[in-house]
Length: 113
Length: 114
Image (cartoon, rainbow over all chains, first blue to last red):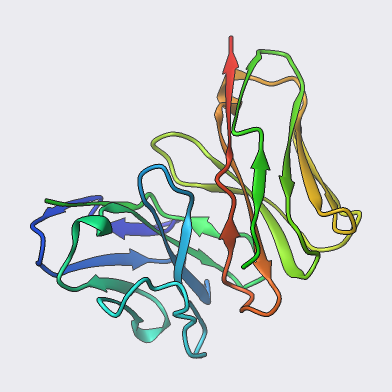
């Protein structure tokens, strides 16, 4: 597709379960980013990948959060043992390089019961 | 941690009015300043990326300026239209961190009444 694709668009799960969120970036974009927006808060950086470099994980809020990017393309964000405070919209973005504008997907709305 | 402040928090204007809002930051020590437009139920859309003091960018009726010496960027909308209603986000990637680590402000929510 032409844009950044995220799935699922909505996810409702019980506290304590693991979830996987998927992001398919724009073809040719070397940089891929994950953000989240909790209710009433601004966009919060989580992690980004750039080419073959080690990812910048400095925004991940706890060791329950991890992400990988396979083959320099699709990325999955995994949250283990979900907590209610993990409820948020998780956005993925990609760009040609780090100094270029980021193109965002429509996000995954995660609700933890 | 670099704090990105946006003002006002929200703004209501009439169709045809021109408007502007501010992104302010305490330090010029960053790689780039980004502006994004986020309409309800859509994904954020990139407007501008600026790096140099004095940079001015324009896209249709929307323009932006950057003043790194005094620590602000302005976003201007000329002749606002209802379709301009959105939240406008400013973000910086601070030096001392990695270039892809964007710190976002909380945004200015613009509502344009027909």
